Image (cartoon, rainbow, N blue to C red; front, side, top):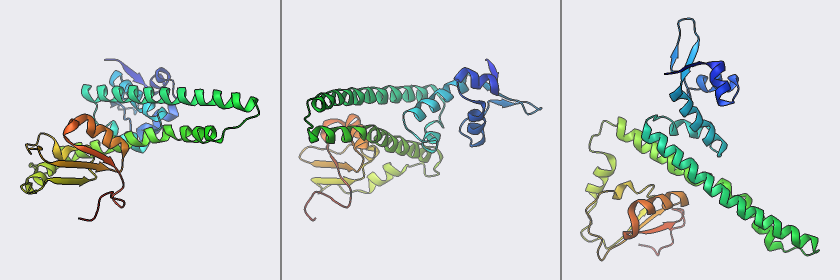
Length: 235
């Protein structure tokens, strides 16, 4: 196992020593060991964690949001982080390609002394797209972290979602609406017969709904809306 001083570690990662010391101070990235003389040393595993921190920061996440996403440092967590980074980068590439094409079209029209205002509106909408992508994943990942911490440290060994599911009487429920379904954990590995039933899972986060769609498939209906504007009749 390689060991790096703070200066060497910062140089390898192409960041400043001040950044490394700050991450240490706030508990985001602590050194693997500290010598009796106070010298701090980092390892190759710390390099992997630093890569995740820097990449997520460059993708638009704040340090406060990155912290819970780096609590786990095992192989599965690293794989999930890399997959997340790849997916976000691909979405950003797609967004930038659309932005480039719209800019080219708008530039051509301006040269022809003809401005189409709908193109300007499209440019404004595309400029917000990156923020929306990050917000979707921020909401999803932060909820997953909170669920993981609850499952890991709660004294209730039954588990919140398992207990809640057991309290629901589904015998006469043919149309079911869940408000704020999150990542759909309530419905994981459950035995409810969905034939002749409509189950609507809703959340205010588009990112959450996209995630739960992948997880649960076509047996459910999915909707994005705020709980203050439920698009159903009363009762």
